[in-house]
Image: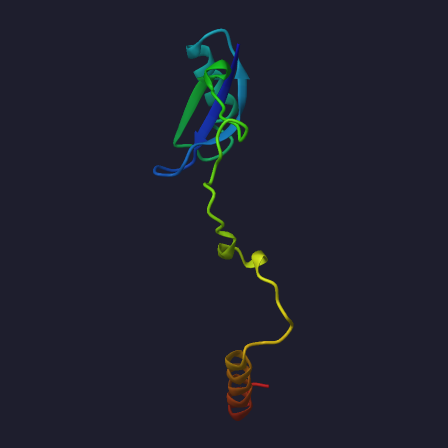
Length: 105
């Protein structure tokens, strides 16, 4: 039987999938998980779950993320025209002038 193993590095962090173990029962799976996945990196706890008990919901079953377009949250959604905003140019000029006055060039 295959058991999936999830590891938590520190208290309060999320458990992340770190691999699997082959074992005939839960107790052996926990022992194998501790040996194979718990001692290589700092580990706070391990979850050991039978593979067939893990369920999946795919995007063909449910629309994830809603239908609202929120692409404005990502910088890659913006098209640049090649011209900087006037305030940015003025700020950069002021910074360059201040650096010259201090002798930082």
